[in-house]
Length: 75
Image (tube, rainbow, N blue to C red; front, side, top):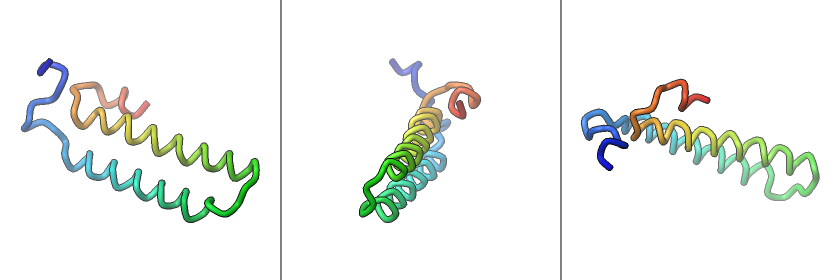
């Protein structure tokens, strides 16, 4: 299954580190701003922030290790 991954010299470790940092910042924002308020609007904001975080980490994280086109990762 080695053909499914980038070779070691082509893996984008800096991109992976940035992706993890962005996910951590968004998770922290979710916790700090939304932990005490319970409402429908808070739930919608939570879903939006979590969706952005999950999309970034999955798309760009997969791009860092797999030879997929950039447009597929950004989408």
